[in-house]
Length: 194
Image 1 (spheres, helix red, strand yellow):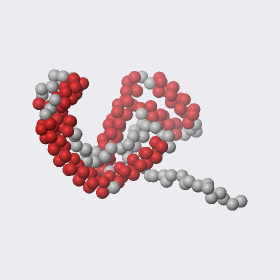
Image 2 (tube, one colour):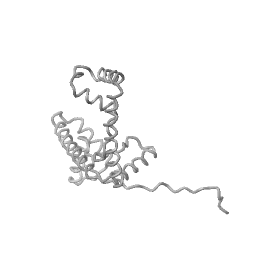
Image 3 (cartoon, rainbow, N blue to C red):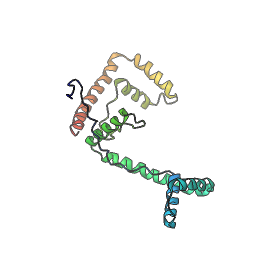
Image 4 (cartoon, rainbow, N blue to C red):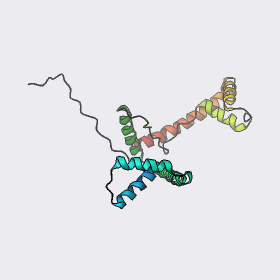
């Protein structure tokens, strides 16, 4: 039977390999369960995970708060080490690796996976502040508005900006223009690395 030329065969998207990252530590319950399973294996008994899971759950439920705290403390220490290793690993990634990993994460989100954030490269150049935010930064540094809440400060800054003479605004526009030119050069160099 001849193939219909109008039908287009689409290939599944190419799987992008994940960038090697530190493994998230197991919770305190996971640690307890793994230790329980090791004890069962060492005892020589046949291991039935569903049965052992129920037994471990009952043992966990009957643990004293002090015994549970030991596992909680270990988990917290492991999690802090994990955060530190992850931060260090993110500093080591090249712009090309960031781009590839973010493409993989985007494909996962498009496939319906939830909770997969885009990675932000801490080494990427930062976009400069706008004219208004440069002005607000100067006002905040003056200390005149320190007694106000953030919401009140924002309103006061907006009012002050609206009443600022055009010559003063031009100074901030010029600062922004200079910073933006430097940013564009840095961004181009960064983008060239990908």
